[in-house]
Length: 562
Ligand code: ADP
Ligand code: MG
Image: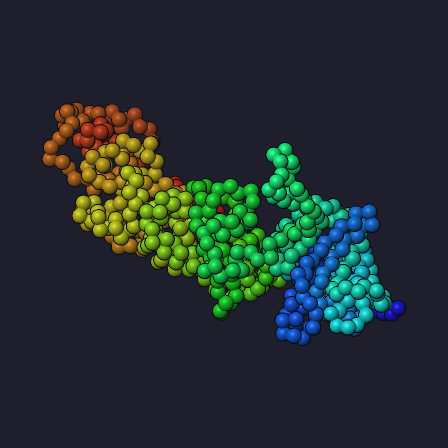
C-alpha cells in the first residue's frame, strides 16, 4: 500500500470548499455523475476507433444509497483508471482543479448561485463526505486500484480486487449531510440535474406490468417483473434533428419536461446552430395570460445534457423568459456573474439568435396559417408586444405579423389598418386616428357610438399596450391612437348633416351644462356630438394623453417592467 501527500499549496482546502459552497452542496452528485458519464463516453469513443479492444455493451451508471452504512455509491462501467492514472487525474488534476477554482472564484462566490453552475469537479465530493474512496479498474490490462482520502492532502493508494471494468466512487457521508442518505432526496437531485444525461442512470428497481398472456383468464392478475429503474431519458428530443421529429414528439417532450402541466403548448421552436457558437434546444409558447407577473424561470439551461440552471436571465432576451423549454449550450460561460454574462459577446450573440429564431417562427406561422395565428393571438400577444417594445430588431420583424383585433373579432396587421382606414378615419391634419377600446363592456356605449359613425374600433387590452402605442406613434408617420372615450374623437367625427337628436340646440346646451356640473372630476369632458347617435344620448370623455399617462405610470416605463 502506498501513502502520500497531495501536492497542493493550500494546506487543507476542504474547510474552504465547505464554507464557500455551502448553498450548493447538492451539486456533488451532478459532478460525480458527469465524470461517470464522461468515462463511459470516452470508452465508447475508444472502442469505436479500435483503440480499446473491449466490448462496450450497454453500460449504465448506478447510484446506490446505503443508509445504515452512511454511504453513497456511484458506479460506472466506463474506461476506469490505472493506479498511475489515479495519481495523475485525481491527485493532480482534480485537486489542482479545485485549488485553481477556489483561487479564482472565492471572491465571486458571494455572487449567489454562480458556483453551482460551474463544476468544481471530483473534489465537490468532499462537500458532503468526510471520506471518499475510489475503486477503479481500467479497460487496460492492469490491476485495479483503491484510493482513499479524507479531504486533507493525505491519501492512500493500494491494489484492489475489482475485476469488472469501470469506477466505483464511495462517499462516506458526513454527519452534517445525512439528508443525502434519504432516497427521496437523491431521487429529487437525479430528477433535477440528470434527467436527460446521455448514459442511462439506474437508481433501484421498479415493478413493470407485462401484458397478460393470451390464455389468461379475466380474473388473473397481469404478470409483473422487476426491472432496473432508469431515471433519465438519454436521448431527449432537443438532441435530435428537427426532421426526425413529429408534432407528437414535441408535445411528448413538453410533458416530459413539465409533467405537472396539463395544458398543451401552442407551438414550439427548435433551435439548432453550430456556428459561431453551439446551441440546441426547444422553446415552447405556452398559453399566456395578460398577467405580467407570470412565473419566469421556466426555460432550463443545460450544458451537454447536464442541467445547469432554470434562471436564464441575461442569456435569453427578457421578453422571452415567459416561454418554456430547454436550451443546451456549452458556450455559455457560467463561472461569471450575471452582469458580466450580459456583457459577454458570445452570450449577446446567443441572445439575439434566439430572438431572431422566435421572430422567424412567428412570421412563418403567420404566413402559413393566418387563421390559426389569429386564433392564438390573444394567448401569445403579450410576448410579442413586449418584444416589440424592448428589441428593435424584433419590432421590425414583428411589425409585419403583429395583429390588431377589432371589437368585432376581425384581425388586421398595422399595414392593413392603414390601408383600410386611411380614407375614412383621418383627422383635420390628415392624421390616421386609430380608435380602440380596452374594455368591451365598460366602453360599450362609446364603441356603439363610434361604430354608428362607421368607424372601426380596435380592442387593445394588454397591460403594456400604452407603451406599444407610444412606440408605434413615434416610429410610424402620421398616425395616432385614441381610446373611444377620449376627447380626441372630437376631431375625427364629422358633423352629420342630419340630426337624430330630438333635443333642440338650447336643450342640448342646458343638458351639457347640467352634466358638467354633476361631474366633479375636471379631467373629464362632456361630448355633445354623440347625442346625434341613436345608440347613446351623450358621452363623457377623458383626454387621451391624461389617461395614457396614468396607465403608463402603473406599468412602469420601458424595459424591466416585469
Ligand atoms: P474534469 O471532469 O473537469 O476533468 P474532475 O475533477 O471532475 O475534472 O475530474 C478529474 C479527472 O479525474 C477527470 O478528468 C478524469 O480523468 C478522472 N476521473 C474522475 N472520475 C472518473 C471516473 N468515474 N472514471 C474515470 N476517470 C475519472
Ligand atoms: Mg468532472
